[in-house]
Length: 258
Image (tube, rainbow, N blue to C red; front, side, top):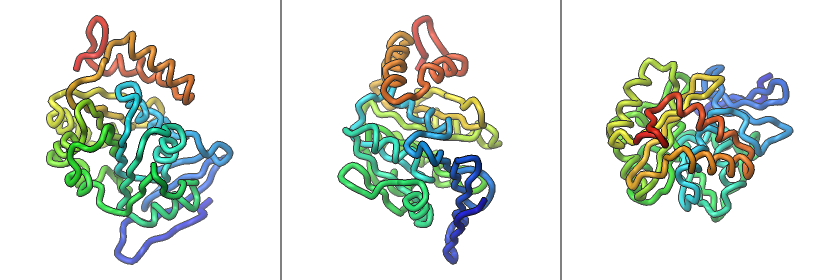
């Protein structure tokens, strides 16, 4: 069932909202799901890949400043705002209709001292703001693939430059995209091969974590303890994610190899 469709003249793909079986979806110019919210549980992260992106908390547990490129329905922004009270989040979204839909249909809260949602070019924002974020989340897609400005060598280098020492960048990629190997290689090169992958179980999303030195503690014992802590606090399946990551990344006797 379609609830909403809007496209400004000369703008990006039309924003559409649909509902099915108690879940509300956001689409951009096609049937692909860009965001989802269970109507009776609007504060939870419905899509597994969004929960996987939050795994950055195992490596950067006390972020003060977080930047998000690509708002969608605002699921990640809303979750961070509600559950990480010490963090200040700046979200960049190039399409004003996406911001309007997130607030009208997905309960994205109004801006305050901890949430700053801006209509603007996320790639330009990253290039212009070096060394001022603890965490950077990149989830910018059009109807077909990742936005070109968010997948260049220069952009990934700017992502690393944006992070403070010890920061982590998180990229949502589609494993089914023919360009996935190219994007992954660019991220790995920009971050000196200090990367880990986490594939989603139910869809083709692959979350890539990229680290700026000094590198985090990636020993299994410490990560397992942190995963259990966050599962209890936020009801996120981090222990399962760590187990899956062990099958997808180089490991040593005691932990991941970065």
